[in-house]
Length: 77
Image 1 (cartoon, rainbow, N blue to C red):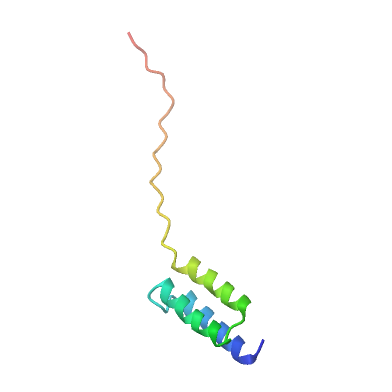
Image 2 (image 1 turned 90 degrees about the vertical axis):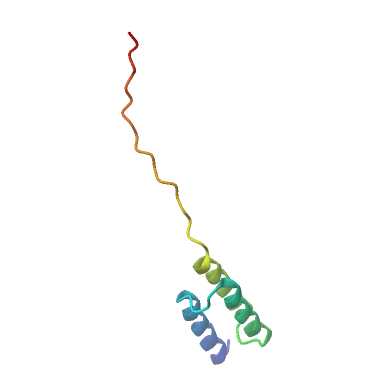
């Protein structure tokens, strides 16, 4: 790994973590350009792509939990 590759990797990691790019696709497009010019290693490309996927993933929305009601038997008269 060259010094340039390390610098590009560290910078892209910071940019992705900070959501510098508006979308995951835009971040990955930049990564593809760096991969083509060999400014990142294949391993760095994979790691940064996975990082972008996790950072830009939409938040998982969970349904609100229903409060549990006491287990009471209903008596019929």
